[in-house]
Length: 101
Image 1: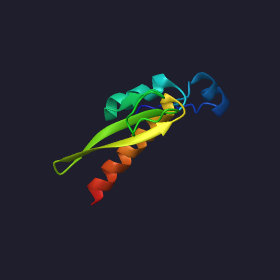
Image 2: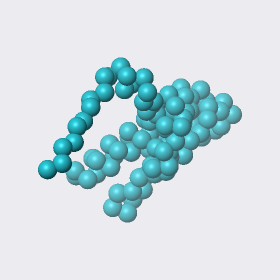
Image 3: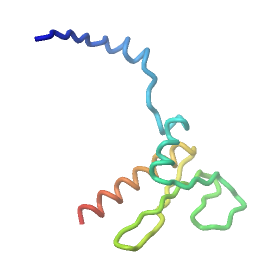
Image 4: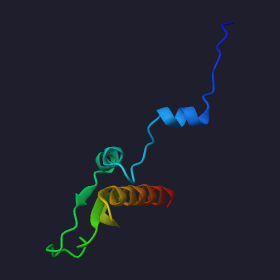
């Protein structure tokens, strides 16, 4: 048969050449989560009156559906990236919890 040789990269060399995926600190990495989970994002706004939007933090929310019902779940963070990641984690958790029920 055909022989294939694989070379395992030295871990330092690999990480020096491979950009880290960091959705909690890089908006370009976080944005696919916004698109995947249809997350709405609101910047900090001291003038907003809605109870769910915090005046000093980014607000992210997603809409989930369960047996014909829908609801919004909210997540907050000091940065847009952090709020997005927290909302995505809630979305995955909510989906998993509803599938297990």
